Length: 251
Image (cartoon, rainbow, N blue to C red; front, side, top):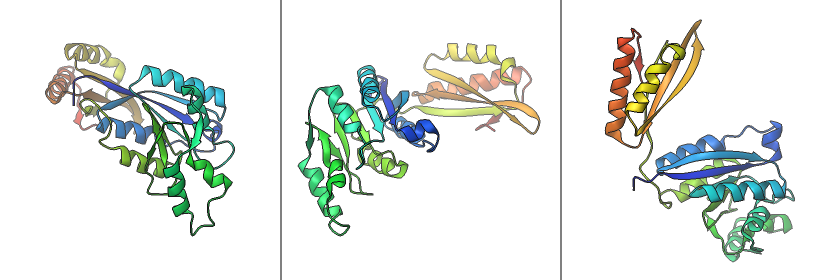
């Protein structure tokens, strides 16, 4: 663990996401998992099943971050082109990974055998390693700083679990919440001043409207537990001085 901030990009791939037919759940679970690993999700791009668009997103985010994750497009059908796109981005050929083929042969032994479509899930960019998948047999893929995972959320979760503890990261990002029926416009100056006084902390303001009243939850984040508590204390003190009631833990 170090003081350096490690970042990751995420490319969410699939026409079904962009059309609204499928609601993405991977962004939240990847972001939450990364925080525990001491890595911050810095940017997300959602792209269609178009080779050039995937290549462009992969090349941009892998260069700008320590890690790149992709979800979607590694299944058995013709529009599952993430492997082809990543291979194109890296300038390497696509090959059949012998271990992936063996895993799939075992998995489908009692399910009709390994046909052409199922064999597609053994394709990897040349030089890649596998990410185990206990759920459906078909593995994820890692090459360099790129990690390719399934689009199905519960399968992606299994792949993330397999990666737990394997990536170099910094200190996990900690957070505390303070909330109240407080119009954020009335405490904007306070929020800015408190954040500026605590350089290792960030404060996010998330307004809501409930029971006919306007309020907000203020989320304080830091990798330093002492700085976090100091920032929370200063914010609460400032809210009290302005005459606002507040609730630790948020509303």
